[in-house]
Image 1 (cartoon, one colour):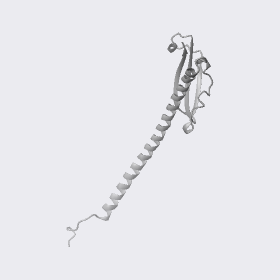
Image 2 (cartoon, rainbow, N blue to C red):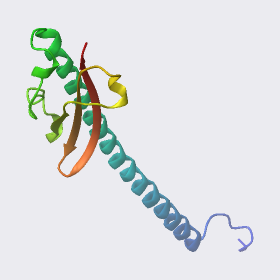
Image 3 (cartoon, one colour):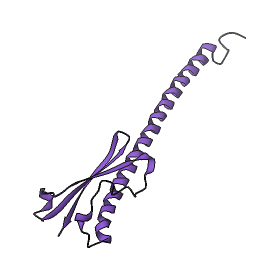
Length: 134
């Protein structure tokens, strides 16, 4: 049997293919790790946004549940502390009263509630809610 009629791959060719497949596998695995970290960050941001919206709904419910209290009775930085606290999130509410911004429209009694959701030192979401007595 002559050398020209032999078919197949040499040992060098097989090693080169294995090395190239290894490099491709490393690139794919590192890309997957980055996607997994990104998904975790997105879940935290979404939880922060949801918690800020729930806090705003809670503030509005205070007025609805007790109409005699009015929005002037909605006070305190820990007003949203009764909400569930997923993933170690912290909710802080600060009030600006009386609020005289353009959004108030000349109404005599306006209050601005700024809701901030943090996780550790990172701010995940902020929401502002204007409370007005008509």
